[in-house]
Image 1 (cartoon, rainbow, N blue to C red):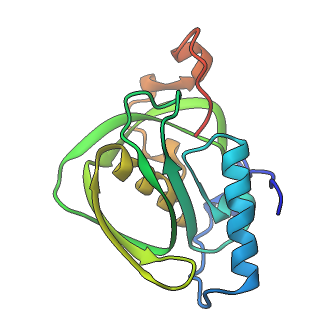
Image 2 (cartoon, rainbow, N blue to C red):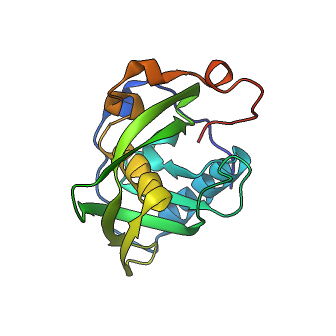
Length: 177
């Protein structure tokens, strides 16, 4: 379909809780997923939530294969996740650097659960149920936060580890997630 503009921090729509998808396998849902995928791929993102392109539905997509922006990260399968539920497996928290297409040019260290179970549906209403850890868990939590109106800077504990990418990582070609 097309590459959509990504809303940036400060746009009130990013702070709203998204509504559940009630009908699957519809042309409107298929079009949304194509737009989200086209936008994520064009911007070399690890994931994208529907609210980031102005659609208030509980839909996220994510996936990372070999990517120079994540040289030490395990691959994350390309996934469409609708109406997700995240359950921490234990209380282990890991801090890690994050960026966001809606917060361009900035990075921060964010605490996330290390091990989670996520459940939801695919585009046809088929059930998804995965237990994951590490970078995969971080990506899912980051994207699903968007569905509840949470941007990663809201989770930062130490603002000395938040700033412009070019200042924090001079000479590195890091783009926003």
